[in-house]
Each structure stands twice: as structure tokens, then as C-alpha cells.
Length: 142
Image (tube, rainbow, N blue to C red; front, side, top):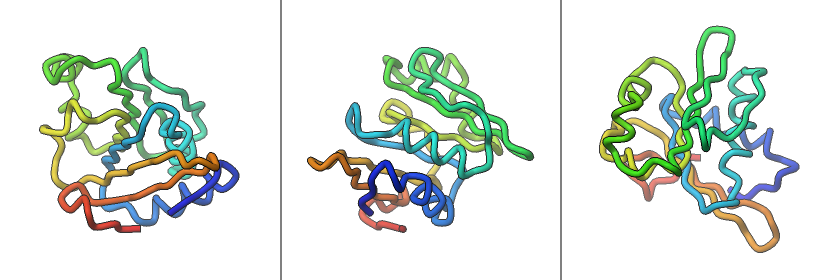
């Protein structure tokens, strides 16, 4: 689906209705709008917390009425061992929401049942979004 920033909150609500998992990995080039989309997703999930990029903290935690969202930015992580050192598996295999930007370094430890978002910035500043199952990347689900 293609969207503009003006419609991002409606897009986030639509994405939530299509999810199969509480683990979402988000791919896109620098400036594609990953964090901006995640801000809208966190709000659509029901959190009133202020969302910011966890580039330096690695993970931010947002609260919901009966749940928690962990938002990761793994851009600065050098290898899987570093991810193990801060307990990535504990987060991934928790019962909570996990949203990961720049997930390439941890792909090998992710479960099969996750959702993948690919974002591409278009020449007109809109975004092209594809939501897929990890186990069948070619199968668009929404």
C-alpha cells in the first residue's frame, strides 16, 4: 500500500488489523519513515507514551493498559553477540509487543511467526509499505 504522512494513523490502524504476531520487524533505508510509522503503530496499539527513536538506548519501553511494547533500533549493534548481551532473546520470546528497526543482525534468532514491514520512500515523498509473513516474504498479507 502507498501512503502519505497525512494518512499514517489510518494506515497504522489498518496494519494492526492484519498482524499475525506481536513481533514486527521493520526494514527500510535511512529516512524511509520507520520510526514515524512505529510512532503511529504504538499509538494505534493504545499507548499514550511519547515515542522516540531508541538509536542510542537500543530499546525503548512503552506502556499500554494491559501490555507493554519494546521498540528496538539495532542500527548501532555490531553483531549477534552484542544483541545476546543485552538480552534480545528475553524480549523476543516474551509475551509483549516487540518492534525492531534494522533487524538484520537478529534475523537468525527470530521465530517464524512474525510480521515484516518493508518501507520504501517514493520520489513524491509518499511511502510504499509491504506487510509480509516472515516465513513467506513474497506473500503480502495486507
